[in-house]
Image 1 (cartoon, rainbow, N blue to C red):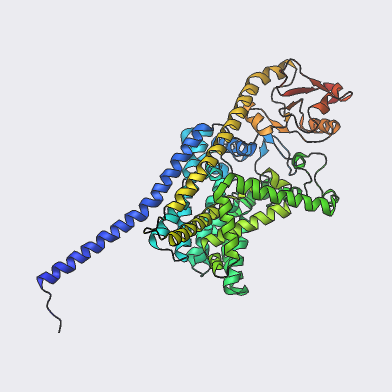
Image 2: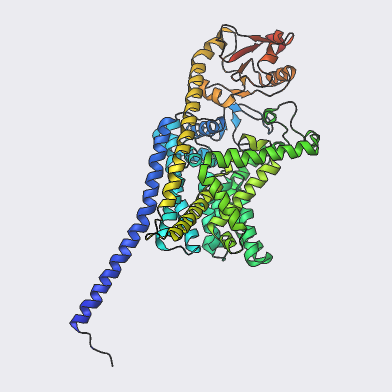
Amino acid sequence: MTAAVTPQREQQLAAREAQSRSIIRRVGSTALAVPAGLFAVGLVTRILTGWLIHFPASEGSAYYVAVARNLVGGRGFEIDAIWSYATPPLTLPRPAFELWQPLASVLAAAPMTVLGPTFDAAQLGFALLGAFLGPLAWLVARDAARRLSLDPRRTASVALGAGVLSAVSGPLLLSSVIPDSTLPFTIAAVGACLLMPRAMTGDPRALAGLGTLLGVAYLVRMEAVYLGATFFLLALAGGGARRAIGLAAAVATVGGLVAAPWWLRNLSVFGTPMPGQLADNAFLTANEQIFAYAERPSLEAFLAQGVDGLASNVGVAAWHNLVDVLIVPGGIAAALGLLAVAIALGRRRGRTWLKSPLGALMVAGSLTFAATTVLFPVATLWGTFEHASGPLVVGLIVAALVAADAVVARIRAWRDWPRSNAWLAPAALVALTLPVAASLVIGASASALSSQALMAEMATRLPPVLASAGVSAGSPLISDRPIWLSDALDWPVIALPAEEPAQLLDLAADFGAQAVVVIERRGEFPAALRAPGVSDCFGEVHGQAADAPAVFVIEEACR
């Protein structure tokens, strides 16, 4: 027999139900408001930064943007410049992405279809994508704080601080306004690491999502293989070899399906699904060998450096990747994050974070750091690790916030503060990060403006100079800045190899090139082309300013 519900009781139940619905609505709106706010902060900072930079600050970025323009123009994946001679066919126009991956250009092309094929349009697309870094870091930090059993106030401060720091961090900010592979790889990698703990339980949707994100990450950068290795290692540590192999196979199958169309394209265009230049990059003894034509890098020359030389290369690479890529541009957040991870690894209880998204980011970042340092010690000095370091940067930011929060908690207990003051840690880190980010942006802006002015001057002055020297319109030029120059002149340009003038003549004959343009004074050029005997084949065009690029016309008798 049930008791009768009195009108007063009905009113109480209705009031509680209304209160519960109100709480749910507030929680839901708050949960949405925080990532939405972080997205807005990230978007505003990126738009402001893009307002200062209107030119690709590196030739790598110029490459992705040039291919994006060709995509929008209906030409497909091709480019009018050759920067490496490692992979045939060596034709002009050149099939794009013999080594790099295509997705960054696809992302740049998307806004170009609406706004026009401009660099600013590409920037806007990357700014929108980059604004997601704040919400993603917030998710990673919130998970880490909860695993550490922080109270709600401290959890909220750590997560919000990580989101804001990721929105304004210098390296992550620049990757959003200088379009290349760095940003989309970071987004896909952080998303994959967020899914890894759930995928390790065998959840089919998580496995499919992880495989898709790894496939997407691979179509941005081949360092995605280290993300796959991370998932296998974490699954192996948590459930044995047979289970880890099964989970990794499921993820690899989905990722392979995503990447398969690109492998088929490479097979039809280059004769191989995988880039052949990977081995060359591993055997580099100097970065200028990337542009080699007659003498490609070899295992014999690589080993001829001896044990001391090989060890020295690895040491220099490790210092560069740690200091120049992580600590200096990352500032206090990177340094404190590295210290926090080192302390956590030294404590058995602290190692439980390895099973979290933060742990996945740190393991994947560590594998990438080690592989690029040991396997590609020379190539990494020109950006191999730098362009794949974004996931580790996000992980270090989260680790730094957790560590700074712990320091504030210790001070609170020591000083017997009546309030938690959890906001102090993120506020301090943001305040210390902003000047470093500003200096990076100002430096990149100055470099971009200088390069933009130089290329604009070249576009105005060089065509008449070449025409007056008898260079046929449209014949390939040889230059140390092939991608910038090709884009500025709308002219085919091939890379200047660091080789002897006689080999340079062979290159010119093979491609029908009639002139050499040396923009930067580096190595033996342009002095090598002015040497007695050599200058008989390379006639310098005089009348240029002392600091202007050097222009040499290849005499007809030497072609």
